[in-house]
Image 1: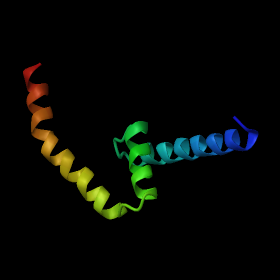
Image 2 (image 1 turned 90 degrees about the vertical axis):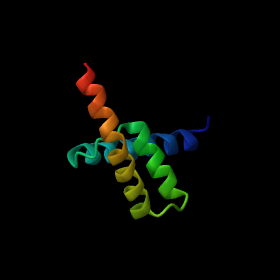
Image 3 (image 1 turned 180 degrees about the vertical axis):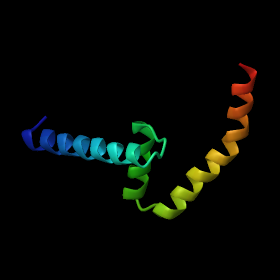
Length: 73
């Protein structure tokens, strides 16, 4: 791996780390892998507002199942 490529990878990792810290401060409840997937989708042209709406809808749909699982414990 060239020095230039290593620098690019390091910069990308630092950017993701910073975005994750912001995500934590905003209490988005996104893990690093999910955040990286969302960033990649946005970089590929996905509308950020539409992506946010999908994430919120998935959370709403998953909430009853998570609550039922918590109650079963």
